Image 1: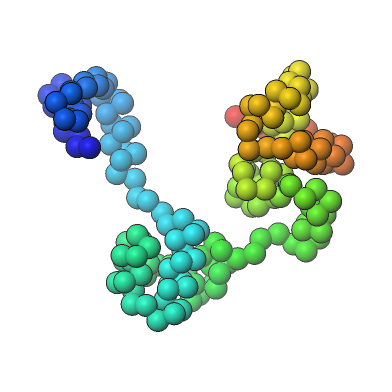
Image 2: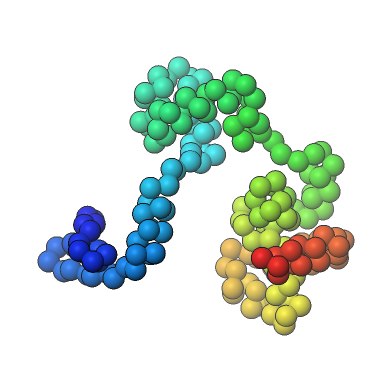
Length: 181
């Protein structure tokens, strides 16, 4: 695909012989340019692959190309790793032993600082427990929740209801905080 700016804030998309015109307001154009020019940060997976590649003796140039990280970002990653280890690059184990033990009671629920505001969420997702509790209070059935959230299973809901029963203040605080936003 090739995008080409045209007069009056219109963008024309060329795909074969079909043209599609999109009218942009000056505000929309400014926002899109800001998003398009935003610096892309390496993902945790890219960071891990880069560090493993360097540890195995790959050259920084080779790692940069293979992983798809800019050389400057790779250099910064190495500096941060040198100064702070895995935690310095955001890959360290998070949470205390007590928190991990507590969450074993709810095997499909986890808490990670910086993900969903640190709220309890379903493992491998960004679906917070409070969101389902609130939906249930508003009248959504379990069947409807499983339809609305296809990644969740019935065991997730059982864990969510148990967690909510055991932590009512936390859930209420999360609901209240997110209603204000």
